[in-house]
Length: 167
Image (cartoon, rainbow, N blue to C red; front, side, top):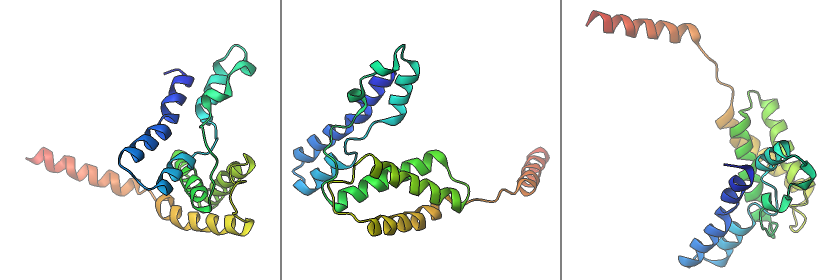
């Protein structure tokens, strides 16, 4: 898919989600979460691809790569935005150390803050630090470094091959 089509497909999950929520008569508060969880952010990867492949990068229409919003209006929808984006980034980057994970979380939160996505909420800097610490504790469990045991793995494979050969 070309970058604009890919972005449109990704962005469409918000209006599709709102339509489904209305169809099944979910509470308006849930619909707010669906609408606000991406705010007015860019689909950065697709936008970057479009700029990189365009003959004239300044002519790439940013609106084709921007979620419709609105920006989060509550602390809760802002926290969902931060959690969704931070978890996705951690999955993509697979930090190998606690330091890398902490830095990833800080950069992710800063990206949303710098993009003014949190401006319509009453989150404080203290709140953002608490959120950062909570994300670290949660993601550390999933993305902690794992020790590889190549010698043990190789020996197990050899034993399995040997057992199969004997049969």
